[in-house]
Image 1: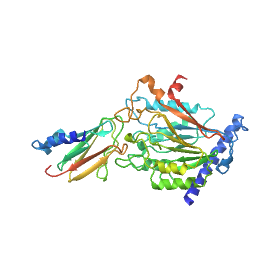
Image 2 (image 1 turned 45 degrees about the vertical axis):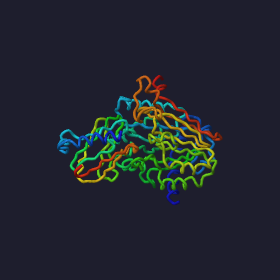
Image 3 (image 1 turned 60 degrees about the vertical axis):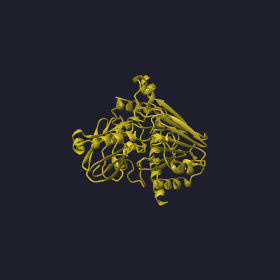
Image 4 (image 1 turned 135 degrees about the horizontal axis):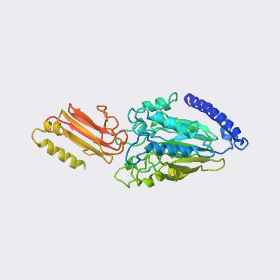
Length: 315
Length: 109
């Protein structure tokens, strides 16, 4: 329990830092009364303001395949798309596969470029492309230093509890995405003290529902994680990995997979194997994109809006 | 597919001077459509096996017993390992763990 409190306190301080910024921004924008987000995590339950955040996924920095000869260009287009969001998202979530081949410097390229969104804080979870070469050593050192566990995290913002899960660090031969017993135990404790009315957002790389086991598009112990979340009235699960939008509703849980900014993948079973899919050049940007998620107090479901890069290219 | 791959190798090995012939021509396993072209292979000790990635996705050749471990192989990149000791070597791709393969090293094979 002491570990968890440590995380909470850190999370609280981080929240305080953003709200301070948010408040300044609000004053400058002259909309202080309508966007009074000067509340910390401690008062988050009673926060009455709506807010939005953005999700970006599968940026695959370093991808040079035929499926997208200009993956850096589409990444930049995605950043521009997020920068144009109004109101500005409170923060950004990156659901993994930041890099393509975990080559030297790739994480830095991503982090530097994402500053272009104008959003101060990005929360990351790793994809298998970020950890396969070294078992996650570099990723954990860069993105999870000082936190207990192996990269998983939680924080509160605006009355919503956010949980970032890691399901790519225990890949075994013949295996699938997996959370592992240590993380599951942590999750159980992490949400134990929350009121069931607290909206919960879970983000992870590999889908937490069975999309297509034949291609490994599933997390083998996700059922256990979802069991801990079952009592909550509103659970939103955001994933990447499959480079296409899919949705599923299961009781109070809504699952959403996201597009990539680098290349599309085939629909489940529509090709011999998963992997980068070459499409006519004029169709490519329509299959890449970013996501905006808006929380409004009193609404059971968060509003999830996907925007393709085709629209930003036109604009 | 697995059976066919094994059969081809068995024929190769049945020809005279198998070890030398393999070293010259190279025993290659093509990686295609998220699969190892010869998922199960039996070779004599001293055989060098080379894996070639033909996918747009990177792959690895990673021994489950930590005997060998390729870096990420981009398109057309190769990885070679020389099997000196008899034994069964299972391996997989750390990016796509559904991809698995096995090399059996046996004297006199």
